Image 1 (cartoon, rainbow, N blue to C red):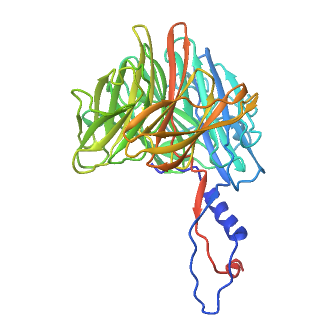
Image 2 (image 1 turned 135 degrees about the vertical axis):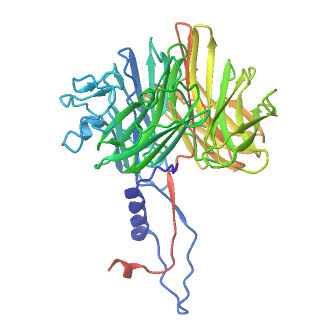
Image 3 (image 1 turned 90 degrees about the horizontal axis):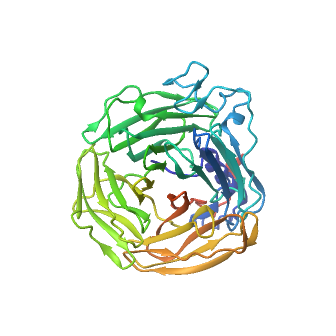
Length: 521
């Protein structure tokens, strides 16, 4: 997967900005010209896509937008999160749902009761939120089953590191509990190990197209025995400015406990996320795994997890043999009986690790036993017991890098977990002002190599509303992070986990010491 928060337009804009604004030195008498080091400049345009949150009438959804303050970004620009239906009101698309090629389960009334589609063009939804400026969280709310997908754009000072969190509470029924997802940038490829078509599971792949032209998408499924042959997932057309929730059970009749879903975009680009709903274990969003790699980190397993399942897949032609290690607060631990995992080429492998964290913070670290073979992976995590269990997912993720942000935090309901799998690392965490008021606060931490810590993150003084946590790497090795939101309702421990990869709020653009004005003529 080629994750980036820059669209082609954004890249071109950044290059134009450098050409027009960077200080250029005239050539010397010798005629020699030496290129300077690449400059890290703030991105100037970002797109984010939020899927349809729920088809339940009992769903209450909140959206939180936050842009961290970025040096050199300026204060101008704007941001907005609008429904796909409103984006297409000019006739460039339908009303926020796909008129695509593969419309299974139609009810004959212009809607799709099972997939959450709606054919109505009468209802125009206003922006759910409009960011006020960098450093200031903004929230918006929606209720019921008719909340649409949202298409977000941010420009100028609103763009670098822009983060939007979608959090939904479902009081009862399939998928009841707390569901959360970071709205994602459009892309052309996604891997989702951890999906299922098993009895009791209802999983959708949500595809959202932000552009003015249709996108064509293939959905491929891989089970324990390899490719699941199906033509139903080929050539799905997602109309402009629309969303298409595709029910996995309409793509195959096979009951698979553990599936890997591959979303490959033939033309255009989409945002993609899997909504995994369970009749007994609640549900949550499964975000895409990071790009296939030989070594992976899955951070932020809750310390009170009662069940942890690892699902892995290798897309290549060679089998992968992985060392499985838990980075705990005291160092790396080998899970008893699960020292290694063999992943056959093109087949989904899974192993149940039980209550692997045993009351302590933990992150799973996967490394090759010998030759490095690219894999993707995710964890299914369960908290609670009996009929009071809830599920969340943790995909393999990239490091925090320069900076990453988690929005929609509140006092006791948020836990920030940080891992340093290879080297001791130093990092800073900043709590923004609250959405309703308060003063930002920062704190610096050091974490030892091979460990995971649930840190006591700072909170804004005089907090009103929700706030954002921004983590920045200062020195040492890479750090990996995840944020858990928890909310217990009627004894059920609802929770959701979001990983925090680099926000890619800046882009490297080569500088020059030559006057390039001639190139503009």
